[in-house]
Length: 292
Image (cartoon, rainbow, N blue to C red; front, side, top):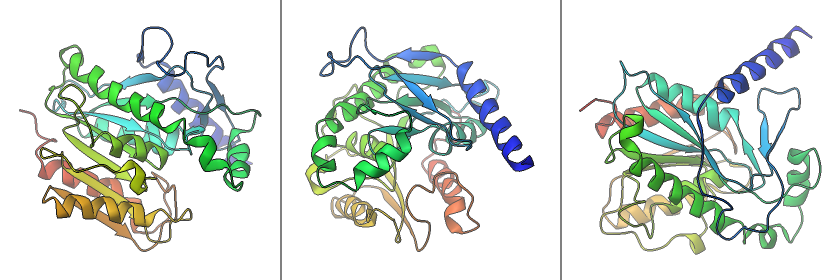
């Protein structure tokens, strides 16, 4: 009982902090390609620390500014995962933002467009739908819209860099699972306005159909996943790394033996617990944790 009370308090605190942040609408009016979507964003609480956000039809960025006294001028867009139907708001979202804030990084938490959940238990609904043979067909039309939101987020942060005290040449993006799809896809087919300066891809869904040609000025990429990924996505991360390696572009891969899918900021007392420290090491190697 005590454990449940403590967990509930932590959830309320985390979401309360999030509610105090500045929230930015990515588009003026309805997002292009989903003008007919009428459902409204909701949050599911299951007595767990990890709240689930669902039914996102109007994508937003929530700003987590770095302390001005510690700011490095680096900005990172964080994209939680959830099969393009939910967003794991805490262990792939706010907890990542808070860790990066401590490193002097300003974070923009992206809520990208999701398919509509038809029940009030979106996690269970997603799990059941993923077992069905038509799940990929249902999610395929949503993926380009989510990716477009990632690109729009980079463009927004770059355009408004001065407003948030960040360097327009130090804007990165990191995503988890479906959010990793959004983040990794931004490393292909970009424009000068939405090119990420660096990319993080954590146990991403990134099949060959979503991987284009590695650009000549491809950004450095950090990739992490577990060999025992429950969804069998480890090869996606290996393939993405191999493309960067073949193109002779900067890349770092951490393929853990154990961790499953969706480890995020969860503590399991195994090496995946420290993946974000390796991400921090990588950012430091690139010079993004030192103010200019």
